[in-house]
Length: 621
Image 1: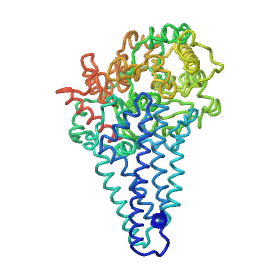
Image 2: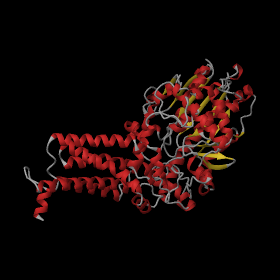
Image 3: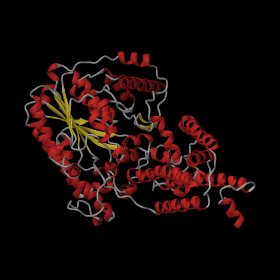
Image 4: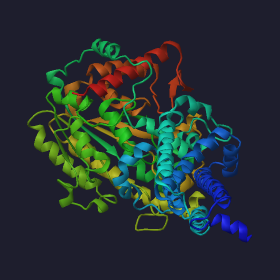
């Protein structure tokens, strides 16, 4: 034992063969520590999503050598890199443990809170993480404490039993450069290769149509690194700039007739959904009372369901799909063609509001890139009326009043396009009683007390929202100027860590079935017009508008108004005739059936549409 400790803790200046044995010990110990760190990250990914069998997922990692290698290699390379740079094993351990387990922890909590995995693009929102996470309760499970114990044990091990590092700057420099070279080659090669990603398919214990489950089926570190391929603009397969431009040229823009330029007020409602669509709540008197004014407004409107790409977060996906018509988009970093620009070119005043911070999702810049002339945020308007923190609880009546006054002031100068995003009802919702009314009770619903509290706190805010929108519609009806109002939800609300409330409501969230898909992704929309607008456009604005992806919502508005719109919208109409659903998970509606991919001529047209969409987005203004 004494000799073994001597080899592990080789004193300065010791000679062979003890030195050789010590180098072998250091190599094995460093590699083993790196593998342990990577293995710990797999424990976090296997247990992140409560609806999956964690033991089965963990077994699937061990049974797939490629998944295992791709998740362990980064932590091994990191520990060696920092060891070569510092000549200290403990520094190598820290340099590997902190980023690897940091990624695993963030991914773990992000999935538990929002059913959304950590992607490389989320790094751009690092400065906003506090605003996104604020208010959620992080569950410090046994695994978190276990990780802290592993950190302490690993650090002590590397300090006490691996004290002497490699001497000589030449060897260490060669080693560090070799690690960096391997990292660069790996990231540019297998880690971002679609072919390798397909080779790691691990669908035995998951729903292969669920983004979060597919992500977790491949571990954590590997799929996170794979997502770096989305950091830069990526053209769709077969993209040819000239062909894309030629396709769009076949669809020239059409003018809005001068006598039909009615004003439009669009409002995206934060985390808004109709809970009466769940059978367990449809018969609850308190819940039906909350939604009664909304259902009354729907009867006076064109209405249906938006089939969004997102759940409980990522609100701008729905927002920007409405404003641009894009089924998918890159980052907006310069003026980008959109429906807002089209309306602005038609002589519309373009403005809007959000009673939150302008830096959130970089809206203060993106809204300008998309064509808005003026936009009110906390910083330049609402801060004097309501604090951003308070706006989460009750700001929709204030927002509705401000929008109405703004429209009255501007509409005399010409037609307006106003688009706003509410902030009230942003999750999470307390699982304890508050001053909100008890719309749902354990005795009446069979739900747990915590679930009833979450629902009551959500419904209390929704009740205020619906009343504010109903009051706004009444005020708009009294105007002599024609106005069309578009209301829609961005995504389903958060409802308990691990979707606990939805589980109690009986939601399967099996997106391979229409019912599960709607439970997870659908939100309501309506298009309402005041009497003046109906008279100008000679249209009723009532009935079923159909269910479709958010990228088709502006098109539905134009169709209801009788406008042909810009050329890209005309192309989009043809795609909607093929499939009203264009989902981020390659899901479509074909002949009233949920389909996984398109075929034949439909697929060919879809690929052409994606190329035209990419060209329109990248060419700017």
